[in-house]
Amino acid sequence: MPSNGIFISFEGIDGAGKSTHIDALAAALRAQGHSVLLTREPGGTPLAEQLRALLLHEAMDPLCEALLMFAGRRDHLQQIIEPALGRGEVVLCDRFTDATFAYQGHGRGFDLATLRTLEQWVQTTPEGRLRQPDLTLWFDLDPAIAAERLAGARVPDKFESQPVDFFRRVAAGYAARMAGDPARFARIEAQGTLEAVREAVFAACRTRPWWREGRA
Ligand code: TYD
Image (tube, rainbow, N blue to C red; front, side, top):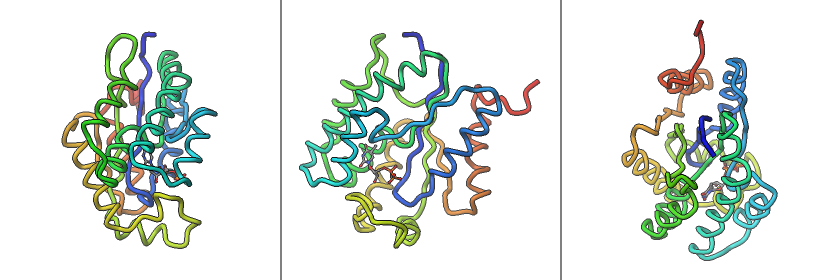
């Protein structure tokens, strides 16, 4: 299936505050005339949402966790993401594979080479190219501040209840993924006001050819 859509993922440690900005970017892109699809991982299809419930609440060994993340991702790509990109839509995805490298790889210490193999298996398109987001917005926030923001906000899931040190490793994992593919990433300084962070998100998008703001 030819793909001329735009695939944007949102990443960051829990509490970094990406959710509000996904909605704001969706609204801006719709106002520019784009057709926008909002989705998330783990999840995004009925099957993958069932896997999400298991992943967020059941204890399991790290290989099992990585396999279920990628199993859900495979279904999500096939059922939702690839068809939407084929229709020329903008897909905004709350987390994608960088989260697996950051959380399962760097956070839990699971073997990165195995994750890279799974990434190849799951994300290779029928045309033989590796599907990755066109743009990844990484909301970078000091894990100590993120923990303060999360404290008391809601009942924490399996990942949110991890200690700050876990999130320091996750943040280092995101930094490593960005270093490996700098053109795909935009690092968003997530410590500022809501307005400042939103402006940083829009500034990152303005550099991209598909951004239509102010165009005749
Ligand atoms: P999150 O976007 O934080 O959902 P919510 O805001 O509703 O809590 O994602 C759920 C959790 O799943 C988050 O703690 C990160 C974790 N996760 C992984 O560990 N690996 C992955 O590959 C993905 C996509 C998410």
